[in-house]
Amino acid sequence: MFNRLLNRFGAKFYNSPQEYAASYEATVKNASRAHQTANLIFPIVASTEYQTLLSEPTIISSHVDNSSELSYRQESEYKNKYAVAQVALDHGKEITFKQIFKIKVLPRSAPKFNFKLSDYNHNPSQPPLVSWGGALAHNKYLASDDPDVIALAQKIVGKNSDLKKILILLNEWVIKNLTYGNPISGLYRAQGVRYLFGVEKVPDTFSFDCGGFDTVFISLCQALGIPARIVSGFWAG
Image 1 (tube, rainbow, N blue to C red):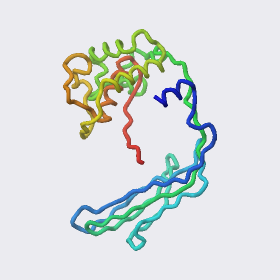
Image 2 (cartoon, rainbow, N blue to C red; image 1 turned 90 degrees about the horizontal axis):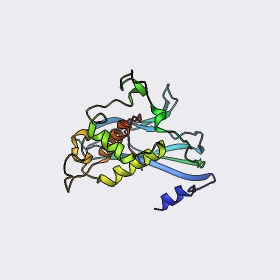
Image 3 (cartoon, helix red, strand yellow; image 1 turned 180 degrees about the vertical axis):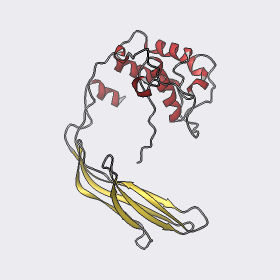
Image 4 (spheres, rainbow, N blue to C red; image 1 turned 90 degrees about the vertical axis):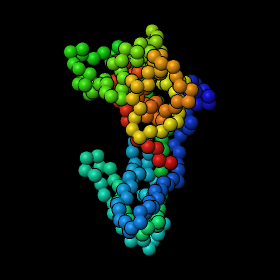
C-alpha cells in the first residue's frame, strides 16, 4: 500500500545521491566424499551511468591457508570484469569469499511513456517467430494462441488502449489469481493450467512458483499482440 501511494503521487524513495558500504559473499562446500577442485567466478561491481564506485572492490577469503588463487579478468564482448578463484577442498570443508566495496547511487525515476496497444501492430505477413524478434512466438510453455487465453486477456483489459494501463491490469490479475508456492524444475505450461482461463475448476490447494507466474503473464501479453519473453535469473541477497 505504501509503495502504491508513493507511485501515485510521484514520490521517490530518495531524491539525492546515496552512498553505501556494501558486500556480498558466496560459500562453496565440498559435499562429495573426495577432494575436489573448482573455479568460482565473481562478477566485479562496476561504475555505470547511475552508480559510481568510491573504492575498488576487494575480495577476501575465509581461509587464508586454503590452496586457492584469485585472478581478475575481463570478457571481450561487453567488457564486464570478473574474478576467478581456484578452490581446492577436502570432504566436508567449505570456503567463503566476500566482495567488499563502497558505492554512490544516483536516484532514478521510471521512464515516462504513453504508448498505445496499436503501436505494437506487426506485419501480418510475418509469422510470430519473425515479428518483433520472436517475442510473439508461442511454444510449449506459452499459450498465447489458445482461444481461451485470448478471450481472457481481452476480458481483463476491456476497452483500454493505453499500454501501461493494460500491463498493470494483466499483472494485477496474475497476482490476484495465482498463489505462490509448489516449486518445480523448469517452467509450468500455461496451456496445461486450463482452470486459470475459466475452462476448469481451480484446485483449492494448487500454487505456482515464479515460473508459473511468468508463463501466464507472458501468455496474456502475447495474446493481445504485446511482444514479450521470459527472462530468467536470480536475485542474490
